[in-house]
Image 1 (tube, rainbow, N blue to C red):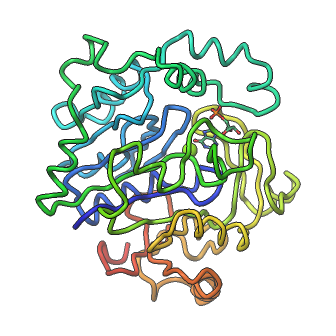
Image 2: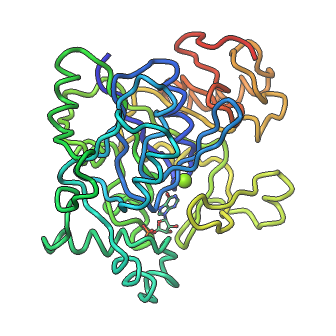
Amino acid sequence: MGVTVIVGGAFGDEGKGKVAAYLALADKPEAAVRTGAINAGHTVTYRGRTWKLRTISTAFVCKTTKIFVPPGALTRIDIFLKEVEETETRGRVWIDEKTGIIEERHVRMERENEYLMKVIGSTGQGVGAAMMERVLRVLKLARDFPELKEYVTDTVAKVHEIIDRGGLVLIEGTQGTFLSLYHGTYPYVTSRDVTASGILSEVGIGPKKVTDVVLVFKAYWTRVGAGELPGELPPEEAAKRGWIEYGTVTGRPRRVAPFNVEWAKRAIMLNSPTQIAITKLDALFPDAKGKRRWEDLPVEARKWIEDLENQLKVPITLIGTGEEAEDMVDRRRDVFGPQ
Ligand code: IMP
Ligand code: MG
């Protein structure tokens, strides 16, 4: 029980969406909150169906979980309403009265900004422009739009009511540590602090309430847009290894590199995780595909995880082995059993 925070350890697209969905199915939180904005796309596949979500937490797959969009988040009305439909969460989804609303003009402002689009490689979703207006205190919030009326509430009060009763709250961050406005590879970063502390601030929870911080890494690293990617591989080498990916929101090909232990250690320093999740282990060890028990993983895969754990000095508790939300080795306990 308590508060679990899911945070990206690299450049986004580590598989936070899948980890949030898995933890929702395994731990059945009473509420899930997704921070960040619509520039981030989280993918979840559950029982053969895939959703690509930009504002609603992938934890919605647990049908008893209440879904919140917090005050520090930014969304677009059309995207929010479309995702409520797609996820069939009407009646258990709320948006905070203070959530920032992105409008068409923010998207235009960004797309017309050559520095953002060409140099930084922004996703061009209007998030930075809306953040700018928020800092200038002219941005409109969810409470200003009648079409959101039935969904608007004080999510902070609701979340704390659950925490105080001893319920479990799952918080899903967006992007990754090195895209943080403060701690990332500035200026090649996003427009917010996406580390664990920034995530908490967006939700309105103090650090003492947190029980677990799950730092998510992919077994290999990817980056879209400009900026340093340590150990970047040429595209031909990435293809040979089967590590080709495309952005969820923009469709751009992702740049690729092997796992970087030194940068991972810095991400640990910045986020104080209690646990680490490694996704896509099956990309390194094809025989790991779909496995749900530690003892069913190939010996080399287990060794790779154990070596990494020794170097990082944080328990690796969750290991993703396939697209399905339930394709996860959970070393905390055996939840779904063998496939
Ligand atoms: P912006 O935040 O959309 O302006 O993009 C700034 C930088 O962050 C660009 O390099 C984007 O590719 C990157 N970025 C923003 N959101 C995501 C995400 O969800 N996943 C991966 N990269 C992202
Ligand atoms: Mg993504």
